[in-house]
Length: 365
Image (cartoon, rainbow, N blue to C red; front, side):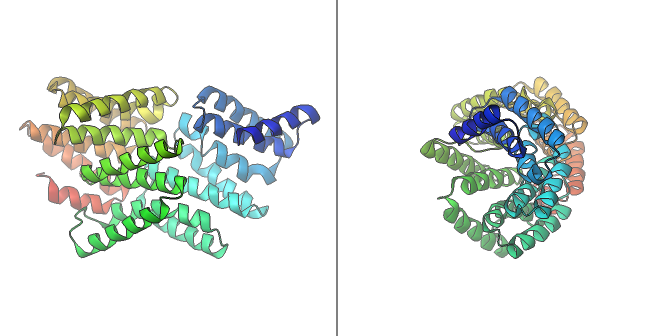
């Protein structure tokens, strides 16, 4: 891919710009971000692509350009909610101009950022059903398969209580495991499945399963010498999972892994404070707790909660409140009631009714 992009840019420099030059610049931006971790270079290429797209009024290229930029560097440097409308526009323009494949890639990016940014899960579940029906209608098999793990993650949060012993829970768990085995030969499908199912298992307190998902992702990346996208999200939940595991067994091992992941998260956070301030603070609060620094932990939980609220991530504000509730409950402090109650309200606002039930059954508030 880098060779083809270099050739495309060379042709642009040699013969002048054309509509397809916008696509070359956008694809180059995404490659710099994902493969070379060059955020600043990616942002410069993205800005150039947008300038050229507007100057040439190249509407037929919008689907391909927007999915690379608003599914990539723009969503990393700004709140992902700001990418939602452009991605839907990418879908609409792609459908209008006959670029059906890229139209639905925009849709999948839209659904992913809806999930990550805390859009209402009940509404998202309806959108997923709508667009998957359209993918079937237009025979977009790859996009349909890609959207499956988003569907599974949303379904569990909305409908499950987190207890896999129920008949519905067992059947759904068996189905997901079969689907994971089928995806293992496809790097992108498998990695994203591991990430998003790992996130859901963490939210439900199934830390062993979450740790297994994130380890499978890392093993797959190592075997293929590739890295998945959404690295910031994966690293954040991996940090939290490592700390949770450190409370259960092999403390030194898991604290060390959490520290390594935290260093990676801090590096990613340099390029998008609005998306990572509260995440870094929550991980730090959890690590303070494991280290026995209770006063520092208490203060940092509150900082994380305030930052999540300020930055518009009430889904992760819910998680921060739940972790604070756990902290105070472990320390026999009645303040846990306030934090669990706030977490309950925020999960309900998110539409995670399965998690609401799970919280009610598994905590003493």
